[in-house]
Length: 105
Image (cartoon, rainbow, N blue to C red; front, side, top):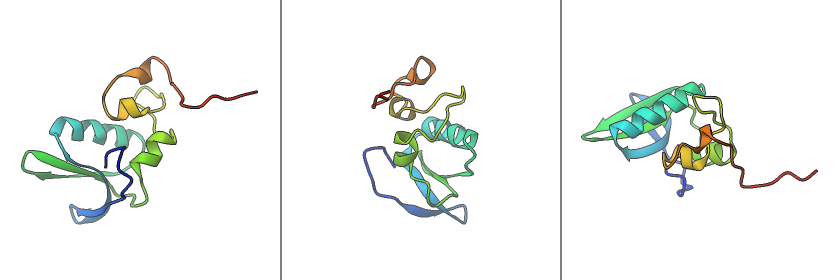
């Protein structure tokens, strides 16, 4: 599931019901997601459909939109995962954790 789609999909992968994280991704993207999600304690299942892959986690209540925007995931370096990092648009998580809100004292 991309971050711009709120639909939560459940699918059977390798005989296990899984929450679909992303569907129709390349092998490189599937590897990135698998490594990131396993680092965060999720059991990841992948299914190859020709050249594209479906990536899912066995936790059927997992929602990538909530996990990324709620800042529940950590990168391999221990920083919070930002939407840009999740989408592999930039490596900003290693420089600074930019919030879309500001704390006021």
